[in-house]
Length: 218
Image 1 (spheres, one colour):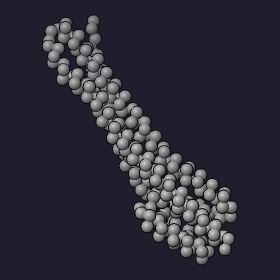
Image 2 (cartoon, rainbow, N blue to C red; image 1 turned 180 degrees about the horizontal axis):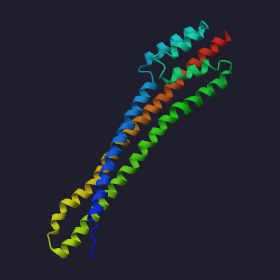
Image 3 (cartoon, one colour; image 1 turned 30 degrees about the horizontal axis):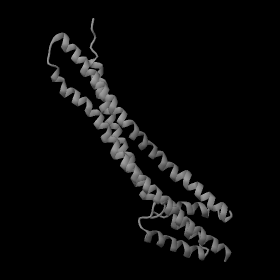
Image 4 (cartoon, helix red, strand yellow; image 1 turned 90 degrees about the vertical axis):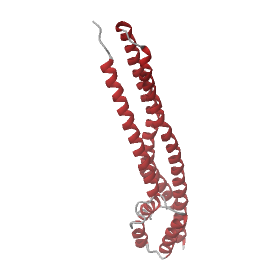
């Protein structure tokens, strides 16, 4: 008694298309979320950063640490990386400058960069898995096509009618690549943005620590 694999293969093909669609949506979600997170952590312009640091400089020179804390915890700045790190520094003013610098660097890597890298790892996973899902769909589609060819040889029929099904099976590989390639480009763009975030945070945090150290010496 012959059993047809067509129902199982058709169901598997549908599952792969659904998986590709969900994978693409989650990849886009991760990209949008990362771009928004990075934008929230950075100052929009260098002028905005300079304006913030000038205010911090003035308050620290006046030994008005409470104003520094209130400024960093205010709505325009509370979500940005540098003000968050300054709040940590203000809570640990008794520490030496070297220890404070090390603490802020570790805080930035642990609480900000680690979260960004975690979401980047999901994008990398999608980039690797989407083409494999597409290839699996193609293989399943080809198995289904050849199964139908075998049935045609027994029952009669024109194998050329399967050209459309084979073409449709190959489409899954193209769909997998269509998901992966834009995410590769988006991932590269996000890596550049993360690098710029690191550079700006290091620069502005360094300026703050210099201001704080000068204030301590005076």
